Length: 180
Image 1 (cartoon, rainbow, N blue to C red):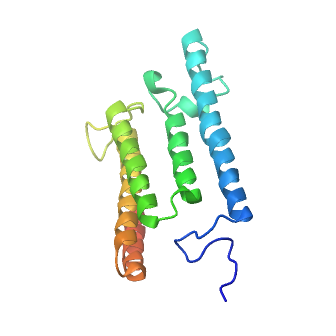
Image 2 (image 1 turned 135 degrees about the horizontal axis):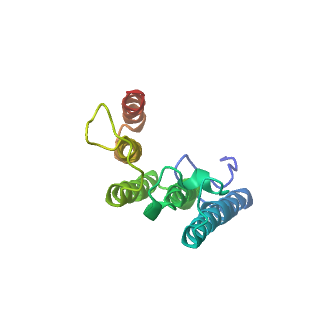
Image 3 (image 1 turned 90 degrees about the horizontal axis):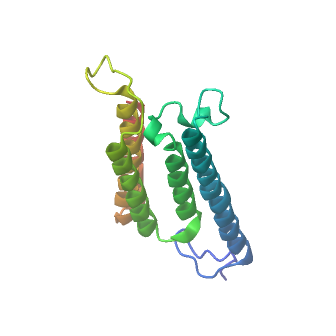
């Protein structure tokens, strides 16, 4: 006889929604709504309000959120927070199918990489290694690209027939990529 595992019949398939699993979904939703959406929106509105009133300076309570961003994009840190909230929300089990979960991760991370590339939100800090380029922008783009690449690896691993073997290979490759 199959034991009750909280409504999970195997690693990827939810057969029923048990009370404990429902509470996890509700808890994740509340955290994502208040922390992942409410907090960034509050910071976004306060930074913009202080900027328009001329009180956004180093003495501001919110200086840590905007000090590396251009004045036009002083609220960009909130986009980082919202992306993380979306990733947490989909990881909480909205998509029990690993392929759907990985595909949505690729979309979220791809949109964020495009947003960083398009907005160029960071102040200019000259690079000695890459003359003429902004080191802060290179760093932001590299971080977003590495996250997108990791999402692609997860998508490839989720569609592989030999799941564990592919996951091992991609995991090692991604770890080496992050260390270099």
